[in-house]
Image 1 (cartoon, rainbow, N blue to C red):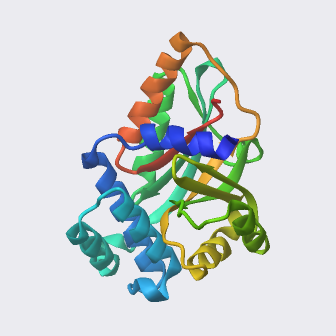
Image 2 (cartoon, rainbow, N blue to C red; image 1 turned 30 degrees about the horizontal axis):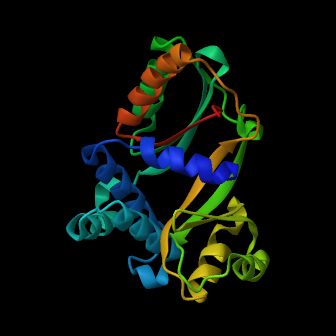
Length: 236
């Protein structure tokens, strides 16, 4: 299996943790998508994708509806997406995506977590070239699906790789093809389960189990922070 499939499987097992952490993070994504465009999913592809991903994680409909309504609330006016880049022990690089209504608080929290665990916050842009940004789209494999035919039909939509395993299909493309790829798949009558933008290290490294324990402490603290949406590393 390819790098994207293995990355997605690892992320699926590890990311977010308990539902008490997951739903607020998914809610923020829905709110931002609705704030940036229409509150009608049929008219807003970004919102439609956010709702799709939330449903894939069994987020209740009431939570989804509340997140959409929150887009028009006054306290969401200052909500923005920010990224941070950091260096951890053992040569591990960390890319952190956040969504916050108080950037000063978020910067302080992220910096504090890194420095308390022998890491450091880097200047934004330092790690951009170390990660490839990819669009990953996942859907169920149907009996009548022909992977080679799907590949041919989706090449014009930006497809780079298509893989099937355990009844699931994962399509990978450059992040700039995220929208066109989703539209092409939906246009073929295929129901998308998940669609995300991920950052994958272009030169992944391996570390020992003991070193991994050090890194896990940092990742857990970061993922516990309410403003942190996703954390990516250069670990293989």
